[in-house]
Image (cartoon, rainbow, N blue to C red):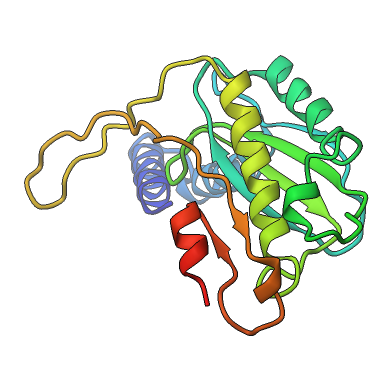
Amino acid sequence: MFIFIAASAMVVWSLAWRAKHSGVPPWRTFATAVTATVVWFFLSGALPDLGSEPKITIGDRGTRPGGGFTHSISNAFQRAQLETLQARAQQFGPSGAFAEFSCGDSVPDFRFELTLEPAGEYNERLIDVGYTPRLDIGGADRCLSFGLSYLFDTTVAEIDHGSPIDYGYVNPRTGEKLGPYIRGPLRKPICRCDLRHSGREWVAWSQKAAEALR
């Protein structure tokens, strides 16, 4: 923004200076240049960013309160993969995939809205998952919420066959290039339903850790 304003000011000043020394009323040139700059500023925000990857959204989670999370993806993940993910996500409930995360409770009828977000200045290339209804993440739905994320993790891993993207990350202390992030094995949450209403942690990611919960 600062560069745009500074460059625009230089152009306006230059045109006004040239107009003055050419015998043309500088105020008219100044006004025209300022108007053109302002108009271009507002129009540029409405124009598509030519050459960049478009954002893609499919599904509709409705208007109820909900939640969401994100998953990083490779460049091979495109609209076809996004549509496959949406179709499979809608089958999580009917297939009984939530059973081991719900402690015997009935599972809500989830609705999903998926957005493929292109890589940007402050984000990796990713999928933004929005869902309804809202879950009590810190309470009775804690394991179900982790289970939902785990099911998306495993499904994305099955669908996305591209190589991890190298975003040029470096070690801030040494300056050494870190290379693309390679995710380790996915961990399935284990529910200690007997501790669900104890006020203590009741979700673990290994059998040993689950047995240690008291």
